[in-house]
Structure formats: C-alpha cells, structure tokens
Image 1 (tube, rainbow, N blue to C red):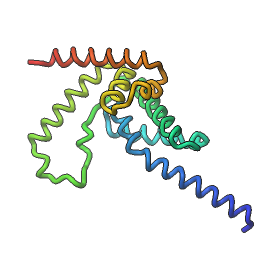
Image 2 (cartoon, helix red, strand yellow; image 1 turned 180 degrees about the horizontal axis):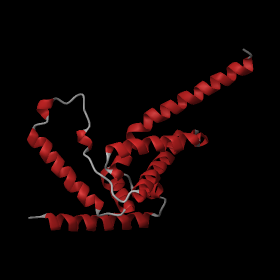
Image 3 (tube, one colour; image 1 turned 90 degrees about the vertical axis):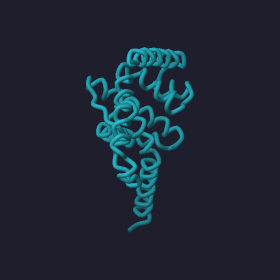
Image 4 (spheres, rainbow, N blue to C red; image 1 turned 30 degrees about the vertical axis):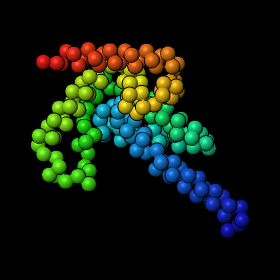
Length: 182
C-alpha cells in the first residue's frame, strides 16, 4: 500500500473512533432526554438511534465536541417533538421497569412495584396535559436542572418564551394535582 492510502485509512479509522466515542459519551444522556419527552422506553430507544443517525449524517458538525453535544440535544428534542406530533397517542411505561442487573428480586416487593407504577402513571397523566413544548421546557428546567438560557437554546426560542412555557406547565400541573386530591 502506498503512503497516501495508509494515511487515508488511518484518517478514516480516527474518524470512526471519534464517532464511536461521541456516541458512547452521549448515548445515555440523549436516551434519557428523549424518554422524558415520549415516556416510552421502546420509542425512546428508536428515537435515540434516529437522533444519532441524523447527527452522523452531518458529521461536519462534530468538530467541536462541546458544541456538538448541544447540537445533538437539539436534534434529540426536535426528533422527540416531531414523533409526538406524528403520534397523537403515546403509551407510557416506567423506566424503572427496565431490567437492572444489580437489583435483586427481593428489593422489588409487589407493594413497591405497585406504588412505583401508580406514581409513574399519575405523573405521566399530568405530563400528558401539557403541550410538547411545555413538557420539554418543564423537564429540562425542573428535572434536568438546566438554566433558562440552555432550555431556550434547546427549544430554539427566547428565554421569555421558556419562562412562559414553564409557568403554563406548572399551572396546568398544579391544577391537575388539585383535582386529583381526595
């Protein structure tokens, strides 16, 4: 093999390694971000894969990993929102239902499983009352703890719009909780 061919193969391997590291470094975060929006593990797995496919098709964006991680989050948010728009009904499942090799059957008593399931369903019902953008803003701000500036970047809107989405979401969720009280 010529020197140019070896150099080309080496460059391709470096690109592949960088892409693999990028995927490995961001996979869990992107999955959780999407899961919090769609509320279904199977859909979140599919949408996570779709997100990475979209990102890697535009790999020229992956030069600066800090900016690329933010860019990847925006792709994930948009992919999840587009999915919700296409599917008016989304089935929800508890992420705790995933097999955890570290948990023992004894730590999941029937009572604990039932309580966790009821709590998850209760929260999922409340989140379904919100618009897609309200849900995204509320989750990113209150669950992920992102500052309003970052949420605005993810949702591609102003900080004032983010504050409005969060305020509306909190009001709707509070009303939902008040109606559910015995």
